[in-house]
Amino acid sequence: MKIDAANKKLLCRYTVENNLVGNDEFSLEYDYLVIAVGAQVNTFNTPGVLENCHFLKEVEDAQKIRRTVIDCFEKAVLPGLSEEERRTNLHFVIVGGGPTGVEFAAELHDFVQEDLVNLYPSVKDMVKITVIQSGDHILNMFDERISSFAEQKFQRDGIEVQTGSRVISVSDKEITMKLKAKGEICSVPHGLVVWSTGVETRPFVKDFMGQIGQANRRVLATDEWLRVKGCEDVYALGDCATINQRKVMEDIAAIFKAADKDNSGFLTVEEFKDVIDDILERYPQVEHYLKSKHLRDVTDLMKDSEGNDIDEVDIEGFKLALCQADSQVKNLPATAQVAAQQGAYLSKCFNRKSKWKDNPEGPRRFRGSGRHQFHPFQYKHLGQFAPLGGEQAAAELPGDWVSVGRSTQWLWYSVYASKQVSWRTRVLVVSDWTRRFIFGRDSSRI
Image 1: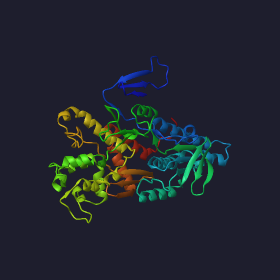
Image 2: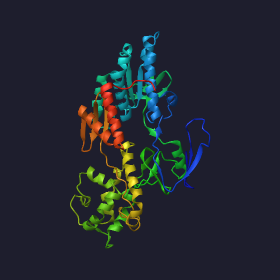
Image 3: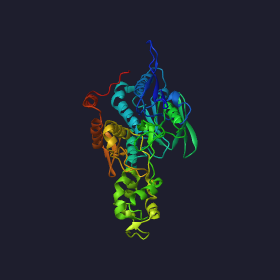
Image 4: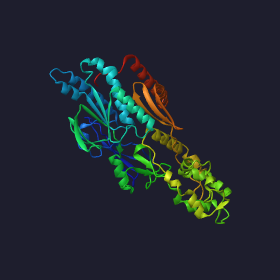
């Protein structure tokens, strides 16, 4: 695929291999383009990863992993193999201790212990699962209590966690890593390696970024309305893009001028209040800054050096009050939760575009006149889950609430089912869980 931004065209190629007649290449013209292609696996240019590792991005990856796991067990029970060869074939290595890698390790452990050992009882004691993490802990983006609980549970389940280890190469038989603490390099034989260490931009998106002057960026940059910077009528969401939040200090003079209605050179509390809502919506980092300082209102910033309330402030005092707010600008995580909210927001904007053209609903334009047509996108974090296997999970929810254990797993089931796109898929997912509880997982090779 290739995006021709100048002519507003998509150049596409049919990639499924078959013997059907006809041209595989075609083009599509667009009025508006939404780029939501996600990202690809980041190998960090580690030798042997592309050739010898499995990934967790596409449906085909899942099918390939399933076949390989079954093949490892089938090979391990063949007569004539030594015990060392059997153990090598049944050594499953997961590189990456983030939520995806941890969930896969837990699910693999359950699949092996609840289903496969019943089919291959002669090798049930030879299975080994190892998680390799370059950091000091797994799930290090979660609360420390969750990270500690996950490590303890993996230890009880017999899943080995090697922290402080960086993979330097992968061959078809061994994975080589460097232990940070000792500086030593060691190699470990494996039957299967799953690589789950992060993502990077897809090649055709990189090509598009070069066309619009974003070649030096890691991901596609958009504004707060998800419009791609440097390209009109193109939007982007999900893992392939990041919101480049405008800094309040870039517009501080324009904000002061818009609020100073009497052009006195001073801003009163009442004048400040008139623009507070627009400031908080246009620059969400201001609200994050207030929360970090435990301030109830923006007007609490209007204080002198001794902390006393003041009636008015000049431009320098106004700058001083908001100069630290931009330190709260943060990139959104590359998660499905973010992408889902962005998709819902963008569809709402497109559906109401004609209505809001003459009646804009967005915040005030501090540089210019009028208001923005739409409200900017605002992400609402609803929490995050980490399934840990054995019908247990961990959750980090808003309000600094941490929950772990079996009840959290059932909470995860309910949330997962509720987030399906239709009742049909909800019923299919729940029926699949029910069938697994009653009959176990299907271990046939597909």
